[in-house]
Length: 312
Image (cartoon, rainbow, N blue to C red; front, top):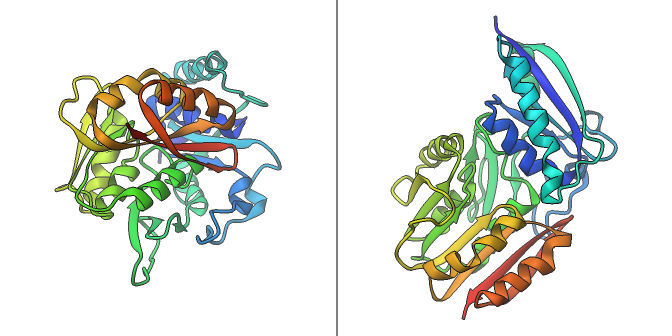
């Protein structure tokens, strides 16, 4: 019977994505996000809520992220490296809040079932509901299901930035488009685009763990004929002209490759960006306008922003 070490950090909502990324890159087998806002989140006036979450499992404020690592001879080094990487995040102006780390030991059978209580079906847009693979879920007539295995990596697709991007895809996809998804993570946005009727999606991520996770989820959702997953640094060496680029990554990174996004988009092409914390909103808007985009709309959920822009 394998023993696992539970790495738990009490931090802020804005640190969730970068911290999860660090944990996955360090080889975490499963990550749990205890965000009390999930209990009360307004998913938009038309959409459902997550079912059967218990407030007892959540902190009163801030967010607790738990990751699980096999107990082995180099565990101490791994945890030191993780802590060091997390402590470097303020360089990117990310607020770590409490930044309190705890380590505990758990038995395999305990964690294998324990973390499943956090993941329930969520209706995230007019057309799309995300459900974990183990949940039996019957879609209504006009509802499309994306199945994710959150044990793999990169969250459940219910983070506000992901939800905002899926809602934008649902609104802007007319059918038949060619799309690039930059920093695909679990592949959820590419899968959503495929289900909404695009012609093809190029899904890119620099992290090979994400590439594996996205490929697995693409196959699980039977959209491998539409979605091609590749390991790639942002839009380096991407040629051709696309109808749409979607990027759910950090604001700092979005600002850096506005020019590249413009280069791969057709005139009038749509650029959907998120991963933007509210206080970075203006910075990203300015960079987009300077890079030759017109801002179509800015949508917000909690502390997060998505900006939809069009190449002029």
